[in-house]
Image (cartoon, rainbow, N blue to C red; front, side, top):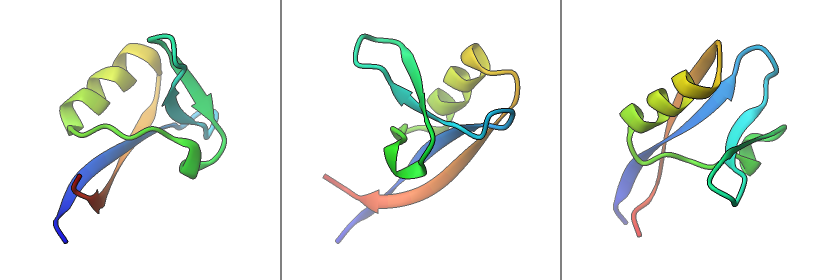
Length: 65
């Protein structure tokens, strides 16, 4: 079983996790299990920078497709 890195963004001010809204925008969810993941750190960081004042990016590993 191959594992690959993935990244989740959390808003430091609200504690909410970033997720797609289904219409090309950003939504925020209260639970980490509801967050969407990014496949690249750079994309996660750029999206956070464009939408949040303060954030943290968490790396985790998931099974490769």
